[in-house]
Amino acid sequence: MKQILKAMSLALLLPLVGALSSCSKDTPSGATIFPTTPVARNTFERWLLKNYTHPYNIDFQYKLKDGETDLTYNLVPADSAKTAKLAMITKFLWFDAYTEVVGPDFLKESAPRIIVAVGSSAYTRQRTEVVGSAEGGYKVTLNKINALTDELLHDYSAMTEYYFHTMHHEFTHILNQRKPYNPAFDLVTQSGYVSGNWLNVSTRDARRAGFVSPYAMMNGAEDFAEMLSFYVTYTPQAWQAILDEAGTRGANLINQKLTLIKDYTQSSWGLDLDQLRDVVIRRGGQVATLDLSKLK
Image 1: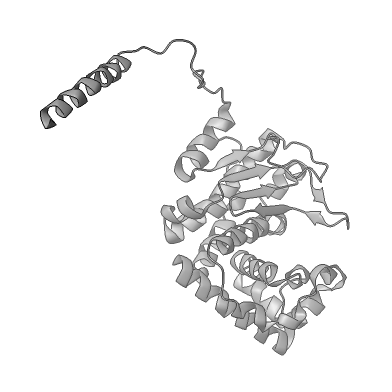
Image 2 (image 1 turned 45 degrees about the horizontal axis):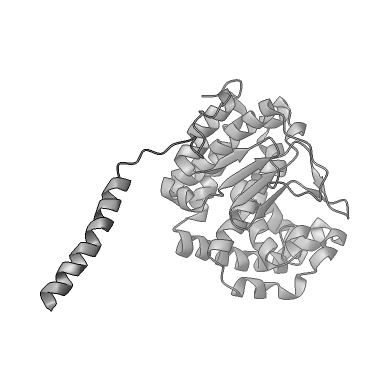
């Protein structure tokens, strides 16, 4: 009986085996569903591929693709020549600075997957200018590209105010989204967070209350990002000026929060914040001598 069953099983399997073997010899007919034409890229786009996409897996966009910009704002595309210059500076002062301190793997794992350059500024209903934003831990948007001039591009202080501070601020949000910071940070100046009312606070009053800027009073997350971005882009002298304006009480609160930020970057990311600041400031001093006339 077992022999009969074996024979029947073998008989049933043989056609299946034949069918499988015959399938392997079949040649697909018709057009492929996948694109076969090479993507046409201009010189700038080839540079982006080499300097952003290949090393960091970042898609640097500047043509306002549908779905990648906030439709609540009235935006215009970024000028490609100005975007190219900003992309060179961004790589030099953001990506290369972090790579110098913690190595390339840090950015490969933590960098935003998409950077969107927008020509115009974005304004909220309250007419607050939005120079940059971070979304979902994967995308950073940089606005106001078309306002760039060659003089502004080589002015580290001015570029810090408009872009470098924003870059580090938004990147901090991405890091926090991946690894939350110590909740003790929010408790240091818990009573000082005023949500949207930060618009009515002066810089001096904000610092006296233990914040580096009025916007830092929005909430704990914005406070954390503001402090880190101010600290790494400001010279020691400029940072001391903030503490001086804050007074004894305000400076003490700011320093308490700074200690928690340094603990976070070191324990969560192996990043020495003081070393990063030294590198950023050194590179900032070299911005004026960068050759932005051609892509390299």
